[in-house]
Length: 301
Image 1 (tube, helix red, strand yellow):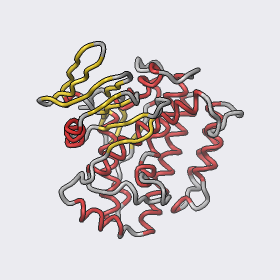
Image 2 (cartoon, rainbow, N blue to C red):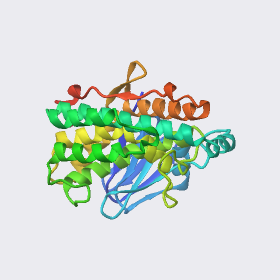
Image 3 (tube, rainbow, N blue to C red):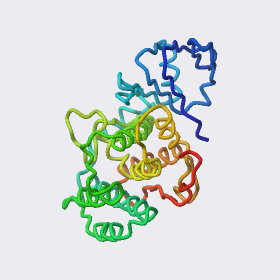
């Protein structure tokens, strides 16, 4: 079962007592059992937390996301060791073979493009969807010909307009970045829970990026964020819009033959991808499947 996220947006003191998150502020005292929390979003820099609470949240594998002074996601808290055999997993990860990494990345790109095609078709962008179908057939190991980049240009221009660029500072891009950050945090949490390092990726290899592997494995879920933002058509990114994006984690998608909440789907996918790398069998990865038509009039948007 996946549970809602909790967002703290104003001056507050947070601590832990008998399996409860205790929030104290000018509105009084609120208590939320930790079993009912999947994500804790600290949206204000005026919030203080006890070390005891942080440790308990980490033990329960609850995502903790910190925002900066602009109330945008800036960082997350991850446990150092998410598994009893984390040292063994790290040694295995360092020895992952380049051909297997290239094969997994190619499949990630294909599945991302499949998701983008589904989004375009749901928005009746059939010409662009047809172009992406062509790119889908051209993906090579390691995406050597950068079909991902070519598909992204066609995709975003069709979905948000030809004048749109991911480099622009506007509500659309702010919403996309916010949604991506939330899903990325969930992916990173599952990687560490499986005992692996988020720093060693299969494609992303930036020496300054502590989340290279999470940036790899988040890709198949990005189209769901894109679709949510397209449905929202935000003119601003404030509290209400952010809460809608947080609720993406409580949606349901198909994976491994069953409908799962997003957080569970991420858990299934990440574990299967990491197992596939260990077994050198990419065909065993369990990929998410989007039924975007069921979200067209979703109450969450």
